[in-house]
Structure formats: C-alpha cells, structure tokens
Image (cartoon, rainbow, N blue to C red; front, top):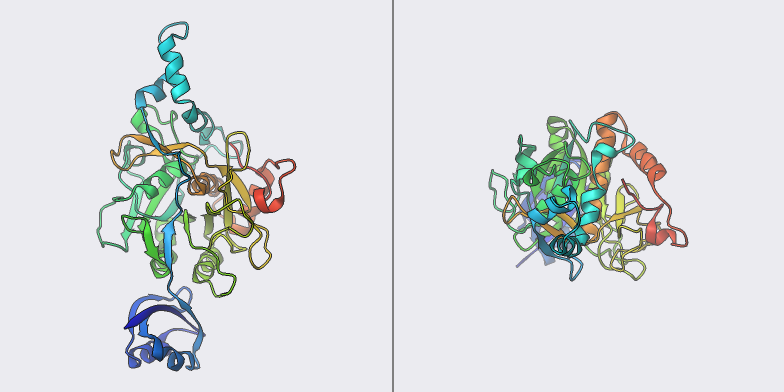
Amino acid sequence: MTTPYIIFSRKNCTAIRSCILQNYGYIRYEFPFINALAVEVPDEKIPNIRAHKRVAMIARDGSVSKLPLAPGHTESVDIKSIRQIICGPKESADTSENLKAKNQNKKTAFMLSKPKAQSLPFTENQGFGTTIAIIDTGVAPHYDLIKPYNRIIAFKDFVNDRTEPYDDDGHGTHVAGIAAGNGYAVGNRYFLCGTAPMAQIAAIKALDETGSGTTSDILAAMQWIAENKDKYNIKVVNLSLGISADAENPIDPLVIGAAALVARGVTVVTAAGNSGPEPCTVTSPGTSPFVITVGSCDERGRITEFSGRGPTFSGLHKPDLVAPGVDIVSLDAATCKGYIAQSGTSMSSPYAAGIVACLYSENPKITPRQVKSILSKMLMPLPGVPRDIQGRGALFI
C-alpha cells in the first residue's frame, strides 16, 4: 500500500530520485521549478527517505478542487434577452414584455455594463498580445474564445491526456470567459465581454469532470507554465481553485509553487475561497504573500458572506482586494454558444486576472511586484470594512 507525497530536494532531484526507487516508490511527476518530486511510497519507507541528506521537506499530496459555487446563483441566460437589455426594445416605450424581460435578467446587467476592457483608463489594448493561463477543469472552444479567430493558443491535459480543448465540468470555461470572453456569440464583441477581451488563453486541465484533482496535478500545471511561459507569452495565471489552509502544517506545496512562478516573472491571481464569513478562511494558495488574492463583492461593493476572510494562520493580511463575484454572466461550456450566471470568488479572480493582462499589454516589462502596486492604486476602499475582509479595496472597471 502506497501513499502519495511531495518530496522537496535541497538541490536537484537526481540523488533523491534513486532513493525513492530503492524504497519501493513510484515517481508520478518531477518538478524542477521547485526541486521536488510527486511520488507514491509505502508509509513505512518515509523515515528512510526523510533521512536522506538531500531531502529538504516532505508533504502529503492532498486533494484540490474547484471552489464550490455560491448556492442559489446558477442559471442559464437567454441571449435574446441580453440583446434586448443592451439594444433596447424596438418600440419607443417599454412594453410590459420588455419590462418583464429586464426584471428577469437584471442580475445580468452588471456583467453587461461594467467589465468592458475598452473603457479601461490605462490601456486601449484590451489584453492584446498577452496570454492568461487558466489552471482549471479545462476550457471549451466557446465562440467567444475562438471567433473571429482562435485565442485558445495552448491546451495541456493532465487528466485525460487529450490534445484538443474541452471542459467536461464547465467551471474553467466560465472562468476563462470572465477574463477573456469577447461577446461574439451575442453578435457584438462588446455586448458581453471579459476584462481582457483580446487576451489569449493557455488552458491547462488539472481538475477532472467533478472539479477535483491533487496538489501534484496543480504543480504539474505550474511546471508546464514555467517551461512554456516564454513560448506562449504567459504573463498571468488564474487559480480559481484551492485547498483549506492547514494551521498545523507550514509546508504548503501550492504556496511554494505559486511563489516559484512569481519569481519567474508570472503574476499569479487566485481566489480567496468561498468559506467565509469566519476569519482565517482564505484558501491556499491564496495565503501566499506573493500572489494576488481576490475576494468577492457585489455590484454595489458589498462584501459577500461567502468570501474568504483573513488573516492567514501566519498573520498575513488577506485578501489583497475584492472584485465582482455575484451573478456573473459568462460562458456556458455545455453549448459553446450560450451563457450562464454563477457566483463565487472563482468569478472574482479572473475579473482581476484580465485586468492584470491589460496592464501587461500596456507595459510588458512590468514585474509582478509592480503589478500589485499598480492594482492597489486602482482600488476603491470600502468604508468601515476591515482590511482582512476587503484587502485594499474593491476593483471595478
């Protein structure tokens, strides 16, 4: 009987690789970007491995999942009603049918009217030339991502090893649309678009059809990004996923992996989790001081009850900011043409990730630290809300 572990080396993994094999272990992944291995070994062999002079740390390979959607906020959206809200009725006055349609779809109005990257004060590039990596359940070839030309420029599948983009859960596609959808399916790219509607997507499927995966799967996705960031010009990584932070165990492989990407010049944006309103509920890797951790608010800047709160168990103020996360309309993977409204910090994170992509499009040479600084100046502080709930404020465009 073997147990999955992640073993960190003091230097490269060459020496401990042979140690693993000698102790009846199996190596699942190698992570040169953090000098670690994902292995399966018998528990009774762990003391032998831990005693090796090159072994720095050992952590269990835990379960990771997409963040659960906030309850009661998931429904499909009628495209005809979307067009009617934006374009207005054909008649000069509102009919009872028009008013009914507006009332039924008023939850979509925020997504339709606010996150339009062409109105950003700091850029006209809308994320053009920049790639956002989405580590999630995959990304389906929705019209808003592949029309009028395909912006899913890379796809890597660590679950089923398929080569063409797909999403058998739907979570990753919804996330990708918030960051980079262009509204093509509703007849005009500005009708319903993400915050960076000209950015490219690198989709990495590390979660299965139930939205579940392992820490090592996420690290494998991060390793792929570290190896391919220059090839695809990946500047931003979105992580709308997480695992409960462990106060008893300071060794957090996801935090280590995220920090390694930031050290390589990639900005990591992650959701704060949906385990609020209690304190110390920010999920990993959002507990890292190096990532941008995003909580959730509604269109009026009111913090949602489910949004993860700080501080972290190490005393760090988190989240860094909050962004819209209630009834956010984005892409429906089931149809590849339709839309669906969902709520959660999973929706807030890509909202911010798209804006980060626009910053990189404007100035490709900025660093993740500079990105954090620029974002902090764009935020709207929420009066009377503690820092461990709102971060530095709300991000609206």
